[in-house]
Image: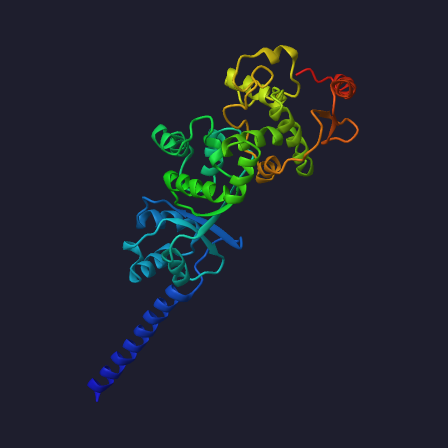
Length: 347
C-alpha cells in the first residue's frame, strides 16, 4: 500500500511537471514576446548576418530573448537566417516572429527624383536599400559597364528614370543598376522612340533637354510651352541660351555642387564649358538634373508656337512671360531685372 502511494505521488508529480513544462513551451511559442510600445518596428538583417546577429538585433525589442532563441532553434531558423527588411508588429508571439523572419525578404518601396548627380542618387538610394553609397557610385560609374551600355559619366544619370519601384532591401548595387537599365528600356517604348525620332533628338538628348526644361519651371503645366521655346531655338540653329546650364557649368568648374546661385551674371556667360549654352550651340553633353517623366514627355510633346524668349513673371510667381521677338522680351526682362534688384539678389 505504501509503495502504491509513492507510485501515485510520483505519477502526480510527473503530470504536474509535464504540465508546467508544457505550459512553459506553450508560453514560449504562443505568448506575446514583444517589448515595444509603437505599433510596428522595422528590423534589418544584413546579408552577412548569422543567428547571433539576429539575437543581438532583436534583444532590445523582446521581453524574453532566450524564449525566442529556443523557439527559433526548434523551428530550424538558427541555421537558415534570411537577410532583409522585416516589419514586426506589437504583440507578436515567438512563433509569429520566427515565421516572419524566415518567410523571406519583404519588398520595400524605393523612390527617387530631383537628383543633380550620380553621387546624389547613390546617397538617396543607400537610404532605402542595403547597398551603401560607395558601392552604388562605383557601380554607377563603372567604365566597362558604361561603355557596354552606350553611356558615359555625363549621360549615365539619364538612365535612372525617377519613379517609385519595389525592391528587396538586400538588393546589391549591381542588381539595382540592372533593374534600372531594364526600366529605362521599358520607358523608351516604341511610342516615345518614335516621337524622339520625329523631333530629331536621340533619347539621351531628350533627357538632357528635359533636364533644362525642369530647371526652368517647376510648373508641370508650363513645361510643354518652355520645351517649345527651346525646340524653336534648336531647330533654327540658335544657341539654347539656358541659364540653368550656366549654373551647372559654374558648379562643375568649382566642384561645389552645394552652392546656391539665384542670378546669372554677364561674366558667367563667358565660362568655357560644354554645358554653357550661351557659348556653345549644341545640346549639353548630359543632363544637368534628373528630369521627371513629366518633363521628358513635355519635350517629346512640346507645344508648337512662335515663342523664342521667356523670363520669370514677377506678377505670377512660378510662371513665365513669353515673347516672340527680342524687343518684346527686353521689355519683359527689364521688369524682371527691376524686381530682382529690388529683392537685393546679387548672386
